[in-house]
Image 1 (cartoon, rainbow, N blue to C red):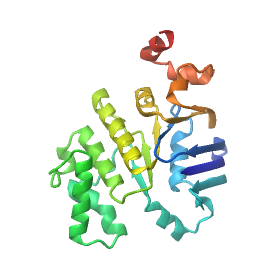
Image 2 (cartoon, rainbow, N blue to C red):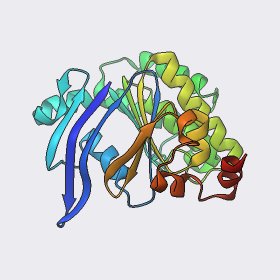
Image 3 (cartoon, rainbow, N blue to C red):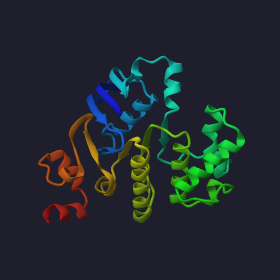
Image 4 (cartoon, rainbow, N blue to C red):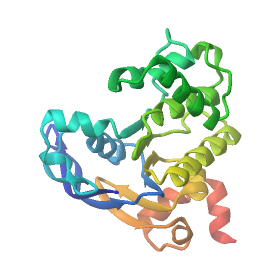
Length: 249
């Protein structure tokens, strides 16, 4: 569980996040949605400590992240898997080396133990025997699956995903959504997904926070989203023709 309480953040005097409070629950795909520039990416980066907040509290279960010293934060980050928007794989490393990287950095495992973990993670994302390929040899969907394999290599308690479907075709996007949800439920991970893809919201949105102008304007489940009378949420959700038709039906 990740709990954020009364989060405020400014950049150059511009209020990007204003009194954000939300609970991200374990075993669920918790989604942050909103327009570009709404503050959702800033919130995700604050959760992992890439940005400092101006005021407020972040708790990872009972541990107060915002009160930790740097060494304590580094230790906690070993429990967090991060899936970056572009995958952020090392181009010069093979698939195996990319997934093994955090294991080499943060554990004392033997080479055999690390390889076993790499193969386990590759099997979990349906990329068996792709160990020695380079990122340049992979499709967009395969790149995202390798990035997911790396994100879960340390057996994380928390998984943060920034626009995981960016640049993918609809069919591949659904596969990535389903994979993230399966892993979340299988290992009881607290997963936070930052997205503006409404197809993802309707596929895997178990708990949703809609951010509008730096404020949580609405929260709920995907079943409640279609029938909401929140104007700003409706303007965002039904911007596409598909969801306009869904609203009318």
